[in-house]
Amino acid sequence: MSNSNDHDWESFCRLGEAIGDGLHHEDPWIAKEYKRLQKILLPKTDLEKNIEKKIRIKRNENINIQIIERLKKDKCICGSNLKQVRSGSKTVVCKNEECKKKYTYNSRKK
Image 1 (spheres, rainbow, N blue to C red):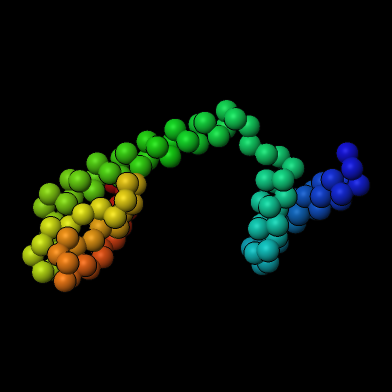
Image 2 (tube, rainbow, N blue to C red; image 1 turned 90 degrees about the horizontal axis):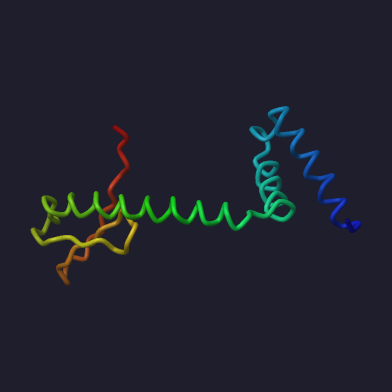
């Protein structure tokens, strides 16, 4: 380990102790700095990255399905149809060239 790396590990440990004491609720920079050092000192493995990618893809597919179902019955206030801005997005926009109003669907847990 280099001298810089030792300093980063010491800072990481001190910040972890501060989080354990609950100080991150008072000073938000503690959690931000801890996460920054965590990314540097403990990078994600390829397996973790692949799992996160699969989760993200599945979540976007579910959002797309839900938006398609909602767009079948929802219309803009001008009466035109709506379309999804991009895949995985909960934002839709009016297809009417003059209107172009944007709407965002909220998540509802059942």
